[in-house]
Image 1 (cartoon, rainbow, N blue to C red):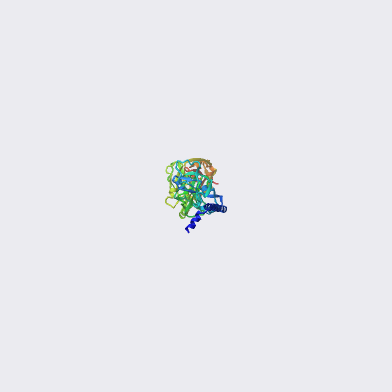
Image 2 (tube, one colour):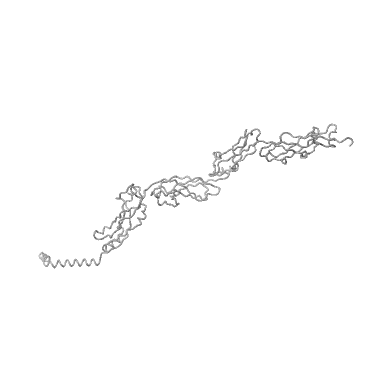
Amino acid sequence: MVNAIKVFFTKNIEWKLISLCVSTILWFTVISSENPMSTEFFQVPLTIRNDQALMANNLVLMNRQELSAQTMGISVRATRSDLETLRMAMGSFRAYVDFGPIDISHTMDIDEPMNINVRYEFPSFLQAGNFTIMSPPGTVEIVLDRHTTQSFPVHVLRDGDVMPGFIHHTPIISPANVSVSGPETVISLIDQVQTVVDLSDADTDIARFSTIQAIDVNGTDITNRVSLNISSVMVQIDVSRYGEVPVLWPEIQGSPAEGFVFTGVSVSPSVIEVVGDENSLHDMQQHGLRLRPVSIEGRSESFDVVNDMREYLIDTDLHIRNLTPHETVTRVIIEPLVTVEFTFGVDDIDLSFDFYATDPDEDGNYQDAIDSGSVEIAEDELVVAVFAAQSIANGLTAEDIHLSATITGAALSYGSVPVHVDAPEGVTQTGELRIEISAVLPEAGD
């Protein structure tokens, strides 16, 4: 047996080697025809690794979205079977940019875009030498910006109107400020951080969480481009009823200086708008709000008194409505007294007779004499002096004054009768006015 094996490997060795080479060539020829080399183009998604290195240096990748959507076009030359396997395992064929080993610092010039190398990770089944990468893209462009954080006050935008007869007060926001983080160029565009609260038909106090938004200088919502330390704030808005309350004139105390007279008082505005408890408001509307007394003692000219109406409401559940006047002005009119004289004729006096106003004398002759006689007035004209405040005196005329006198038996015996002066309100007669009268008796025998 041993000899037979020895003869097999030693006899005709040249021919046997030639046969082996031929068979090997034939085998490779058959295999190549069934699994030939080929080139195929692949689109490999680009991924980002170790971007925490950017955050550690307060940097932000501005074109992250564009990079994440980008694919690398790669041509691979390999056998048909390897290419088929590669298609089935595309998840393990990767292109990526790695920020980990890159020297990134605050001193970097990031004002302009920069290029970064693209790295590739091939499936483990593709052994070196079994495939060829045909000129893969070497770099991609990145855009960096500084990362910053800034505090902004929260503004409340009110949408809609409260119910008629109600008013809303200044919102109370908690917290009042929020921190916004993001790229420096984006943060610089923020005009305000706001939240919108719907007040439509509200008639009670409002307290709710409301989502906040970052709004740029063009009025565009850019919340999705930055990070907020909170997403909503608590907004409280008090809603109260309001109405007009009449302001009542103050009591005028004392007397002005000699020769002057108090002629009037006014209050402006005569109503104030008040907000608060509905029952308290209704009660004050019914009774009004009287101003404190004003003294005119010794005054010789008009003057104003300013009242801060907020002081009148301190002990109530009410307060002045925002953006409406909170002060009233009391105008007290003090005027000098002016004397005016008017001349009247006797015919201007309205005379009446009442001879029975007194009893006749004990003989009865006095009354008979008057009944059969006549009355004569001695004066031809009368001067009437009156005094009044300057504003009244300026418009006073003789037609505004009426004179009258009643002639009685007693007046005849006395020889004069008082004249009553009827003048407009605020006009007073000075002294007493009398006219001389006499009775003319009939001659004897008449």
